[in-house]
Image (tube, rainbow, N blue to C red; front, side, top):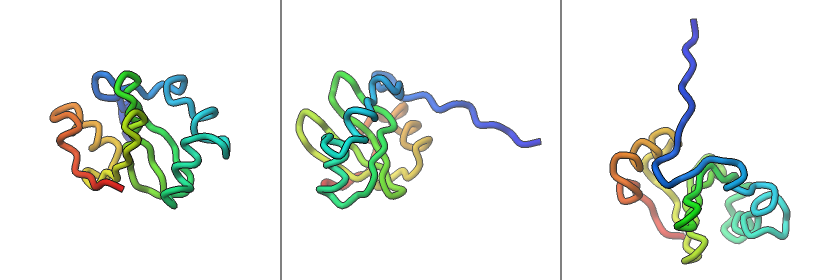
Length: 105
């Protein structure tokens, strides 16, 4: 019998709610900032997975990698470690964002 994984829940203060992620308006249209981010950094199609509505950060995936975009500071980081969403969330729940290893783009 195959086991099913429990649903992933975001760290405190973060959201995975579609209304908060605004994919249809902020990421999908060619004139949106999320779409343009993928073009400007040659990332391909960007899909938001969770956001901090207060802090303005969005973690998204593109090309099998994870990135963090800070809308307020207009900074982009590639998350190098961990490499899966489940692990990223676990680290953030335990250590906060400082537990992630990333590089600035």
